[in-house]
Image 1 (cartoon, rainbow, N blue to C red):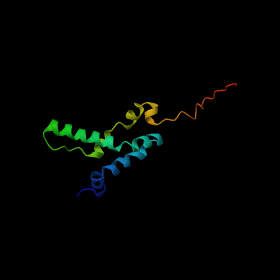
Image 2 (image 1 turned 45 degrees about the vertical axis):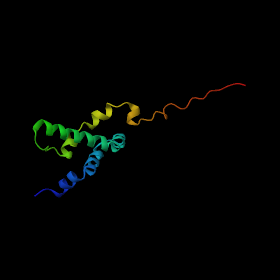
Image 3 (image 1 turned 30 degrees about the vertical axis):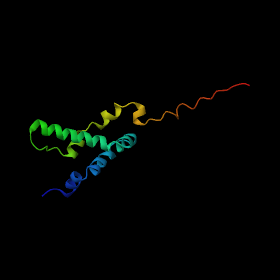
Image 4 (image 1 turned 45 degrees about the horizontal axis):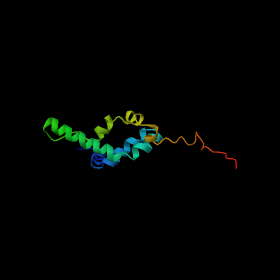
Length: 100
């Protein structure tokens, strides 16, 4: 008999995705919280590749895909701007003094 919780996560991919976010730090959670659509698209692509390679229905579950997903490597592969880093606190706005 299947585990009800696992079945729920298989049928509700966004809940499965959000269940992975608490293990990340706050800036990563903020970034990946907006990336569900892209990551789910990558999963769909992986399913297509699996089906094409085996000629069978794909067996990979979204939870398995997320378990192997390189969250940290992907995050640190981004530029600070893409990660949402805000450096304005470190460098105040420049003021120009003019004399009339």
